[in-house]
Length: 452
Image (cartoon, rainbow, N blue to C red; front, side):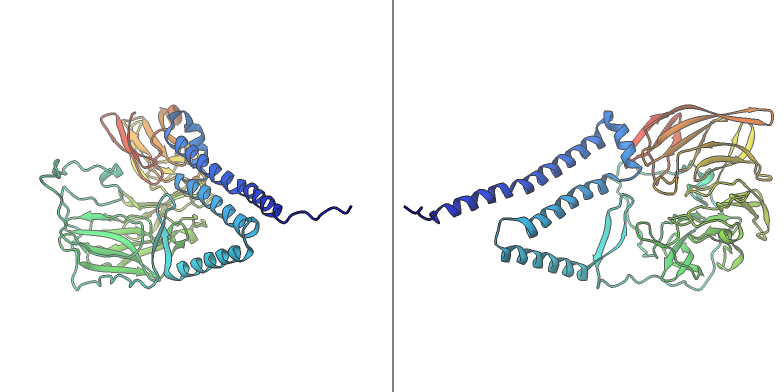
């Protein structure tokens, strides 16, 4: 007797079994993604996980790590559904077409105009109108008239991010701050230098890099000096990075492409200028030049980053003539600072791989010490801070943390001894403030205080 054909009724059962088995892959992907997010949260918050967090921070920000975990899971789930999901082919093709159409619509509607410090994209509508920027008014500015409240350079007097005479309301519930005016300006990362009734900064407008002077009381633009250059990096954004310096009625500013200018503070007209990268055979750092000029006695000092004795350079503040150059390391994103250690005035600068101290009179390197750093992926940004007459506090993000060095002097011989180092005060793109034996700052975004 011939065998009867199998019943069609068994097919749905087998097909249903295949569908159940096929869904194990997306379930596994989702579970792994959730576990990855939980693990990242633990690594960020648990003290015992700091070594792992420090190693990760050299390559990934916490936000970017989470984006990678979620994004990879989404890509795997999408590919599984389109090619392997146990559903009708028409449904899989339809989902793929809808997903691609949605991507096209989003791309045509929005654009990424830059990123925040932790790699979060800043998104805006493509057809949003550009903000109208102010034009300079007729007249001059008096940058020679100083006051006790002046903030004439990067991080203020002495570059210690401290003001002695500031009086702020302690209770903002009863005395809230009031906005006096609001003024749109061009793109950039520069801060303001303030002297008397005027504030000076740098900004990018189109293909021109500007040094601009505003009235503090009204926000009106008094003058602008333009250099026809434009710096752009996908993650770092557009425009100049350094804060100008105001000294004896003149403005000294270094642009993102290495143009150092001395301007008349009254009109903004150039007094002298240099292209420090070309003149010192230095390379442009990946994220642009961000060194704020330091005026010390008769010299304007900047980090050029050239080799063969052209790392730190000094120019005459009045006529721009070269005075000296010294050091061999490439530049970081820090700025020179004048301090006194061991009774000796010196200029400290954090370079790409070493911290050096220079004699202000001729640039001679007094001492140097290695400090973990590389342009990619661990650039040095934060300023060194003198603590007393013989110690220096170092801080850095990217998993490095902070350290205290003791500077010793024996005649003309200098040495550096590390007193301690730990994972605290990872300042990244910010700077610490020292007061009464304590250092305050942002530790990967969290306000922290350490006992020096």
